[in-house]
Amino acid sequence: MKNMKSLKQSLFAMALMVGAISLFAFLPTASAQLISPGDLPSEIGAATGGETDLRALVLRIINYFLTFLGIVAVIFVIYGGVTYVTSAGNDEAVGNAKKIIMYALIGIIVILLSFVLVNAILGAGLGGGA
Image 1 (tube, rainbow, N blue to C red):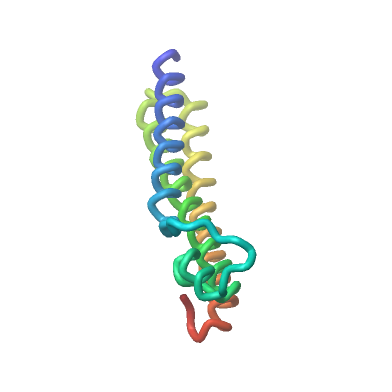
Image 2: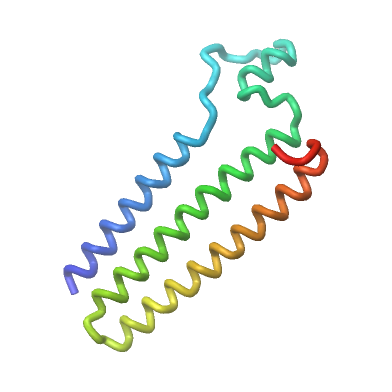
């Protein structure tokens, strides 16, 4: 029982680290300058990674968020698999692991569908996608 608790804590810590790393890896690098309210639109575009269109910027932010959620869902599938393997025939633990895997897979499907819908709707105004 103690090993299961430490395994859960380790997987949770790993999920937080992967989330933090992926968040910082996918975000565009910030400009070295601070932007004051009187700056020109071209300087604002340079500070936001070249995105001057609000729709393109929102699409990029939503895509990063959905990517992060996809990574979290995959981590839950892995966690459910580890729980299933380490259940040692305990019916309650096996059932719990199957639920975790099933809900994580449903989450991945929902994330993929929302990714397609968001890119189809917001990408239509950008000339085919970003």
